[in-house]
Length: 236
Length: 115
Image (cartoon, rainbow over all chains, first blue to last red; front, side, top):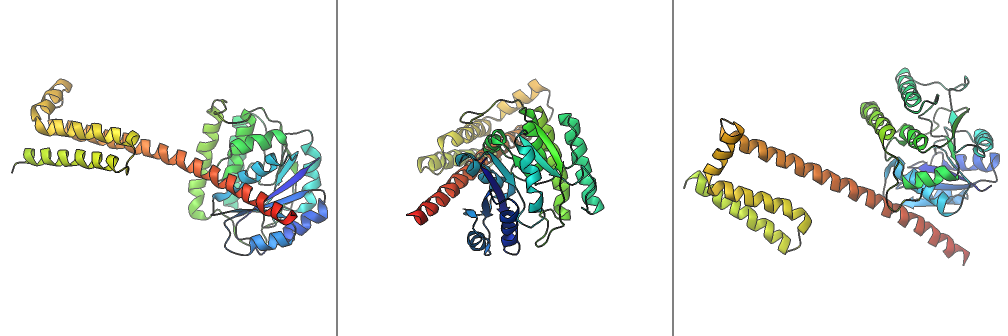
């Protein structure tokens, strides 16, 4: 089984090396590709030095576009499983085997902080958002989800192809689940630990959070009523 | 100089500018069609004020210029919507190009190392 780990990174020189080393320690069979989304620091050089492949976008295209580039890379190079992981060290590499184990009989495996009690703690505003989206996605897809905003995921071949064709551009996590469910993918959650971030700060500032809530809600609802008709030039 | 005369000149100028932009390939034909249509309508209306008043009375609009404003506004909305459609399509295409380029560049640099 060919496994690729996709790490989208924007100015993550402080943590990227450690993330790559951890992966090499806990999942040595996996290849690593860092999607360097127009960083202005030494992310690219450090990632190359640590032994990862690096896709450097010529300018910042945002998380969705960067992540999709990783999936396109996985598709082009014939990977069976693509795992997305944050560059800031939030997602512990120790949990990778859990995701990989489930990936063989599921199209998408989501690492969830809330399937079982984990040590993860967050602000109450953040928690309200997480619960709201989990309830919304559960309602729309009729499958129970506990952590729809989690960016710690393993995707099989079917999902790698689907994500290469379409991936939401900003705040993609929640909508991308509904998109897959509409195309009959088998999705499951596994309980994973997550650390609070080591360096850098969340991409979601208080000002943006209102836009985030409205945009993602609209995307989820639109995704739920969108007819499943592949556009010309897409591979199903 | 009355407002009628002025509006005839303005609408004529508007049409001329649009056509000139197309001639210099600053404006694509497909996007110019709506503007040309708009310019011609403007020209007709400014030539003959009766025209507007007749239509207003058909529609039961008491104050004819209000109808002008309404249609002008609707036209603007439609055109802006059209523009955002174009922007969406363009940004999708630019993103796809960027991604393909990035992947190709990485492949090239890797092959460069192997040789």
